[in-house]
Amino acid sequence: MAIRFVEIKASDNPEALNSEWVILENDGKNPFNTRGCGMTVGRRGSAKKSLLGIIDPGFVLAPGERTRMLTGNPGTQAHGAAPEDGVKNYFLFLPRTYLQGPGTVLTLVLRGLPVSKAEYDPSQPGGVAVAAKKA
Image 1 (tube, rainbow, N blue to C red):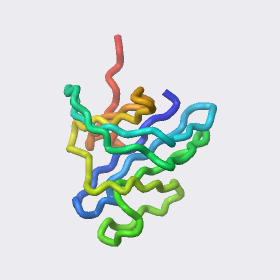
Image 2: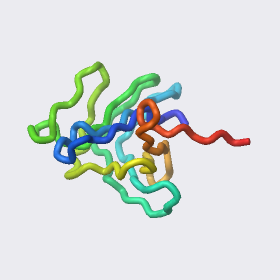
Image 3: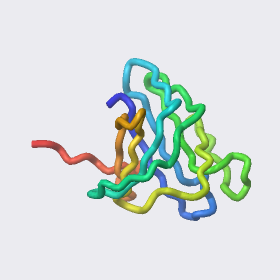
């Protein structure tokens, strides 16, 4: 897949929503527009998934570019400050954290079809579980 999750970070404080985020990267050769995409959250081994919402207006990921999608609202002081490290920030304006601990599976979808999928594993660098190699 050209779009991939490169970092998943859980919040230590459920009130500090801007300390929970995912970073997406475009590994492809063409720009990718996230407008109309959604993100689902579920658990490893379960078919039940919840749609967090539709990304609107969205953002364009140029080839090789990364964007951090933060859970909270930049205008709410209680949500905390967003990191300022050269990665673009995009705010989801969600009312609460969504990571459910290790084994949480996040899927970026477009019109119901998966674009990218990752599992949260806090023991891995970047919090993204390493996919099992197929024999």
